[in-house]
Image: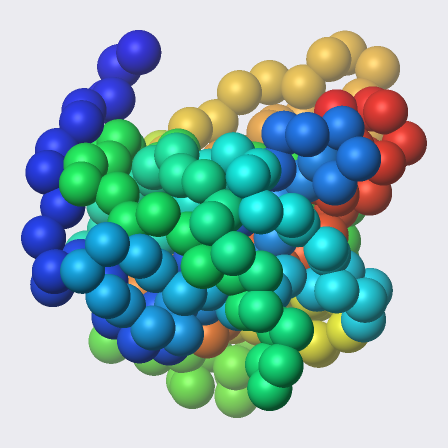
Length: 232
């Protein structure tokens, strides 16, 4: 697999309150869940018990899971086993601490098909997110085709160029607008019968971590929905 590399992990790779994702392949609880590191010991990690729709996901001791986290634009993932489940005072999972992990470029963010309102305009020299947000200039309105924590694709009739910088405003469900500077990474023609002429793929630039978390949450919520319906 291109980009796959197993590397040794160090104590500095694990921090208290570090966000992680728990991937479960067992049929009953199959899905991707957000969690965080609560405690780090020599041989174990303590993770927050994942929740889904306000309910605890009761992952059991002995279950093999995959855990991933990001650091300096690199995504690390490792397989581990749940050793113990603690319910009080907080619901926690104690897992075996790994010694090595798979390393992937962040471009391996999970990408999911999702249509949300999008508007954009060209980014001009000297612009900022604030100046774009306050601008009265006309925006082109469209919708997304797919989205991930690192970028998205939308359609448009406007002839854009690969490498162009855009100010993009996304209408994130349950969160409201999210504004981000983006770079066009690819452009392709849509099928003849499509309403718009072009597919445009962009990567997000300088995206704040909390804003990225908002996008990732939407992606994983949609992924879980598709898994539940047997469509993924």
